[in-house]
Length: 293
Ligand code: URA
Image (tube, rainbow, N blue to C red; front, top):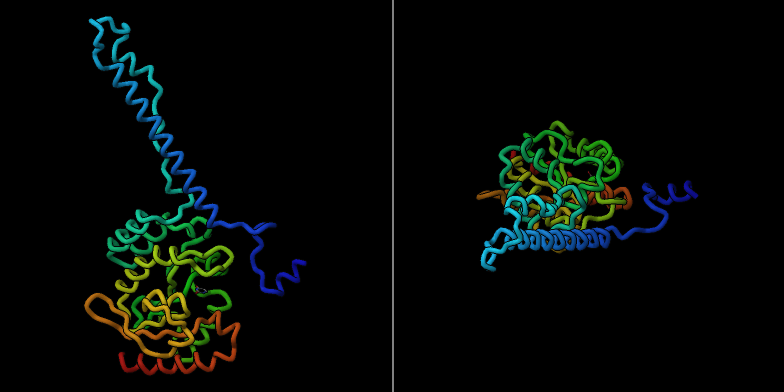
């Protein structure tokens, strides 16, 4: 049976039964909210009780006889709300805001890498083994952006090292590039469980990081591989098959650089007939690169 699954392309066996992790995280978030509310109530009633005991009694001085400090010592200490950063999280506005502020605060590629590696606001980072930041030469004129790490990338902490990475290396070699003359990253730095496509809120949460990443690298030319990368960075909902091979512009601050949407190597592995189109795009990228450098 395992062999059958392996041949059918199943690479991860997670559970006997399917688990809706999105529902799980929502449930956890609700539980956490309820716990926080209960802790807040407890704290408020403890404070109220303490205030009543400290306040001079309005009964002609016939208090209960205990000193205020003695009363305070006897009060049960309210439990402070527990830190939530290490638990699973469905990104909310606060997490989005945090991602935006953190990304803005990065003044170098290394700083950005450190910031992303310690960011806990994205649900994906909790199931991933590694943060997959980038590979290649950040001083190269060309920057390629994929979707999200797969199993091999998650294991090694390096983008595009699995089967689609091997194809990408061959594609780069075909136009005389390699990882010393190109820089490679992804929209999402953590592997989505089971290699599923990242969902909209995960993409939006990671958007400030990739946008800042591009700003800091300042490439001369961008290549967006696949639908997720293209739709996110060109803000379009046109399908990759309709816009691949057509030069667009990506704004970096006041300037803009040429950006080419092209097919993702994983797509090419499943649809070898599309390699013809990819080759066309590669030649166009090579020509633009020699114009620009
Ligand atoms: N697919 C991607 O989009 N990125 C990787 O790093 C690996 C596979």
